[in-house]
Amino acid sequence: KAGVTQTPRYLIKTRGQQVTLSCSPISGHRSVSWYQQTPGQGLQFLFEYFSETQRNKGNFPGRFSGRQFSNSRSEMNVSTLELGDSALYLCASSFDPAGTGIQSEQFFGPGTRLTVL
Amino acid sequence: QKEVEQNSGPLSVPEGAIASLNCTYSDRGSQSFFWYRQYSGKSPELIMSIYSNGDKEDGRFTAQLNKASQYVSLLIRDSQPSDSATYLCAVGGYNKLIFGAGTRLAVHP
Image 1 (tube, chains in turn brown, orange):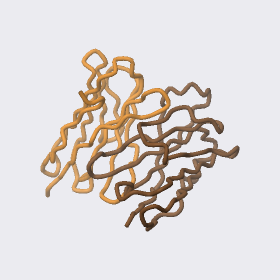
Image 2 (tube, chains in turn blue, yellow):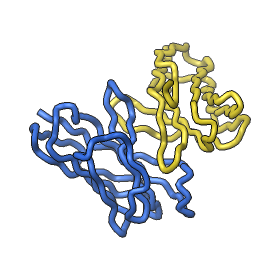
Image 3 (spheres, one colour):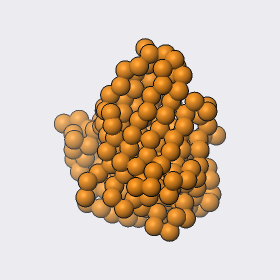
Image 4 (cartoon, chains in turn green, cyan):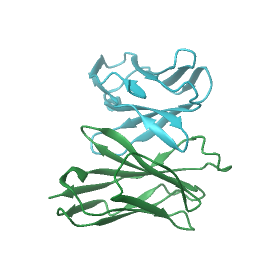
């Protein structure tokens, strides 16, 4: 079974620009979560989607948004980029067959490394 | 108080020794617990999951859970230099995982 894939793997943007990151979950997984990882803050939860619905959101400004498509693929968007948005953005998928939200194992993609200049 | 706490390390152990990694969490209602390994420049890789009190063994890895003490641990037996990485403890919340800051493990020959 193929793992979680993320595109692009690397991005360089300038302040004020916007960016869209893409994630394809493991086949059959309907839950997709996004995390931001920085050396100072560690792994921070951004949001989680299940069946095209955002079920949970972390403490990030509204510049961070996401969506999920009917095939469970997900995208996240960051508008008006700031220097502090430079980070590794990780997508993870999990099975959650009953849609209960009780966390089962999450499997991470390789991440997208975003650098904001 | 942080939701998930880990000693940042580095924890240095000789090759062949047992490495013991610890994690405490604040939410008594948590039901799922995970250990991830992350090599420098790579994404986290799931190595253990545990859902009930007691021990769970998988190869050289043993996860231990004590819900009364809100404590999770990971033991790595016969540590190898290839085990040198950052180990992240994660606790299942509602529709999300809450991660600790990670413990850096260094296994020296």
